[in-house]
Length: 435
Image (cartoon, one colour):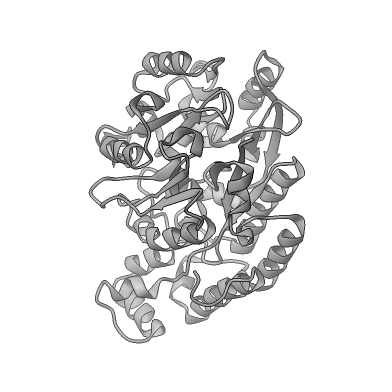
């Protein structure tokens, strides 16, 4: 039996609101605010505990080394770490803000994953996302590759591919979905891309962050045949409204596609392919006259996790913002009462992540594995309540309580962020140099 494990990114001690992500409305609107890294990490850990309480397996991916002085050295700064960071803050503060970003917490962008039932060699394949469209995110690929190679090292069950060349923008699983009768049945993998830059209502130009050629390259690397995957264009209307990734307007699980009416450029073609290739497919669509794109994006309704419960049926793991909007919650209760597999609505508080542009689904990477493959995963990346308690203690002790914009130039904060990450790695049993 194949079951799905969600690997959540733990929000790092450098979590701040620098507003680095073009096209991400929440990130831009909160730029310059004071962040709360400790609260953010505890909120994310609380979501992981919720998944465990539902009887679902839960994994974790770890914060990256921040601030990243080594990356700044590649840009011509030299000296000790402190000297590099100080020079960057004084001469090119925008570069230091990029080197400080904690955006690796959104592990839906860590990689694209194809489970073993879909691939030609019967292994679970990962391709690390290059995230080349955004400077602060393009820094992540090397550390992400190291983590995935460590967590999924057994090559009998897993293949971890490095990132694609930077000219092919690839944003990972946030722009791919999988549908099938079950996790263990061969599925249809849907890769969603942007065709070209899109002009927003205020005249700003949003880049096409997922390239079609990148999605096609990932499908080839994973050994997917033409009947097993679909390349679909995202709606330009959705991109212009702030849906910078497909997972802001659509999510899938087993035979269910949960999407906004305006998610795809050719809605009818996508739905036709789903019904033709996925036996028993169910599409739950939010009509525009009930849920506007603005409302869907503001509440991150479709950035919910859609998961299969051990007891049967499916649950939507929703951000608190969706519960607080009456029009959204009324529609969701109609969905739950309707003739479809969604039987539970579970609300989580990830407010700190939401303010920086990422909801529940942004924080997780889905990996479906057989029992033998699951047994081959490095156990340090798999959670239980005891390990959650250990992580929580480190967060309470080590994570900064607040970070204001000017704090990024303070050596005390640089040292604290590094010490916090080191304490976490030690608590989880990692040795120096592994990550």
